[in-house]
Amino acid sequence: MNEIIFLVEDDLEGGYIAKAIGDSIFTQADSIEELKSFVRDAVHCHFPSESDRPRLILLHIVRDEVIAS
Image 1 (tube, one colour):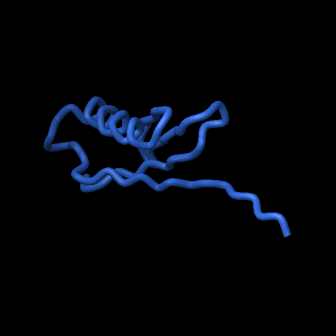
Image 2 (image 1 turned 120 degrees about the vertical axis):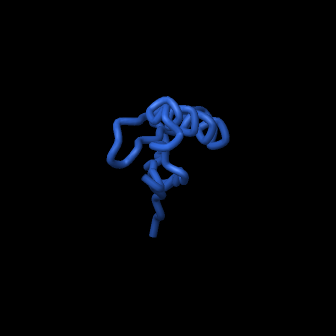
């Protein structure tokens, strides 16, 4: 596996949540910088063998914005 993609969204209670697409990996954090660290740790735990671990971790950050007309 060369890459793993995480969908990152705002958490309703504050902070951010990240869910891996295609794998059962989930984490949350108060800031994007903290989330990056937690995602990296979660990927290392989910793929303990370096040969099986994705080389790239991609964060797809989604934000809902309301624009009034």
